[in-house]
Length: 227
Image (cartoon, rainbow, N blue to C red; front, side, top):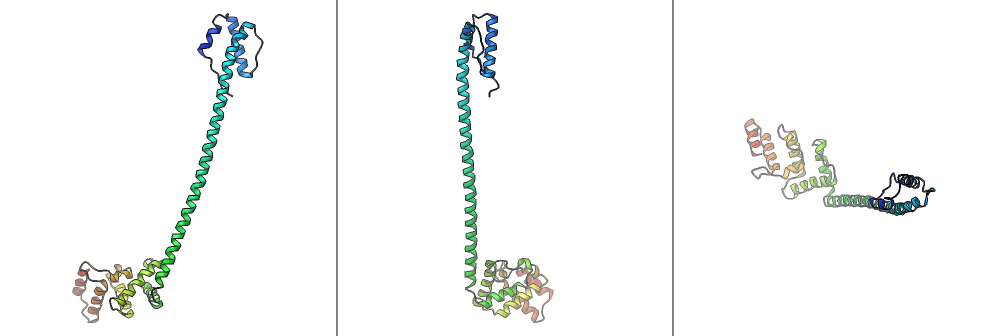
């Protein structure tokens, strides 16, 4: 129900010549109709004037009801669209999550397949070397373990080191006063310093100097300068 109603200025012309009493009677009839939809008794001349108002009120009321119904319909359409979009969004998120899980599974399978190219001893040896490093720097995934195995494989196959030499170099560098804080991953063994010298060679020279009893502060400092 509306809180008010409109009286158009154009409706004044039919009532211009009514007396004050007739205009008062008309006003009472208008309010009664607006409040209760009832047409009260009135004199013929006032009733004739009232019908002009009533016809306009009925037209306005129909427009108002049609507008309310249209707004309700639009609101329902928006609600259904939002609900549908929400369902689609949730479905899309679910699909994306599934795709991510599939990709993770593919990566896991891929990493495991790559690990299979190394012999069992290389994998076990890499795991044992990991125990020489801080726990937070050890391989946490198959991919990381694969990278460590790849270093061991290339050190033996391309660089000509034995498993024993790799273990000895790793153990030495991890116990070294300076290098223990710098050598936190097995991958460093095949990386090169600024002079292009692989670190496994740097460590081997330090170890050789120490083994020959020439491990002085000067020779260690010279090795550090190479780094």
